[in-house]
Image 1 (spheres, rainbow, N blue to C red):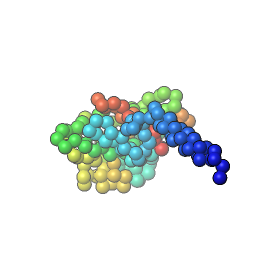
Image 2 (spheres, one colour):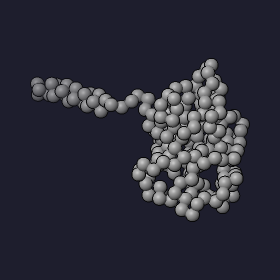
Image 3 (cartoon, one colour):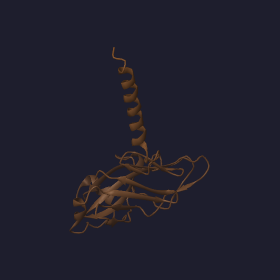
Length: 181
């Protein structure tokens, strides 16, 4: 056996370990940037975008999501973003924040549309300790997606400026979620 071989192996292993350590530098352990399906925690509240999709007002399946909504503008579509929120605190109420927005790659911002749907997320509502939204056994929770909906009207031009990114602003920071829609 070559006497230099063990020294070479030790150096190679050390270099490998060093490269792993350096590649982890600069990354937050609990990142506030995520993708659909991956929860993010801001303070005691956990937010998870379950699903996003464009909704069709002429489709029977989408009617309950679009209760009371006029047809979208000629050059736009409705986008439903379905979320689940969990208050992880054992003794403090949480509040569903307002100010959610969607950004496209051209830095255009889109804000939620008021909705009368039984699936709609109610901004400003309280979430009790160790409770969740949508509430257990509610239409939104037992529905096909299992989440509360945030409704947006998005111009067709935004489809050319993907990926779309949702912002969740709270007093504990802002999370960004890349949408699959």
